[in-house]
Length: 92
Image (cartoon, rainbow, N blue to C red; front, side, top):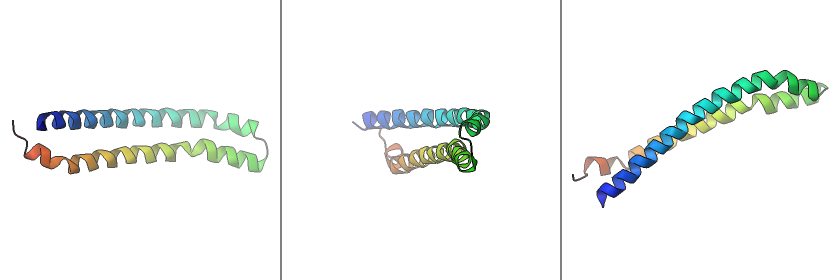
């Protein structure tokens, strides 16, 4: 029973780590496209207010991805600390 719980926890930790790595890759991809398409959106949304809105929408993608990255890190640390006693007192 404990070994099954330990296997599930390890699987969840690996999935969260994979999500963390993919989030970092997605962050770099989003930043590249944000920089690349910033002029395109500024051209479409003509005028100062619309250009500012486009800059907020396009430039704000990095902050959202950074938040998701730190959220994944916090979830991984939380599960590690929460289930650490199971790893320490596990019977083999």
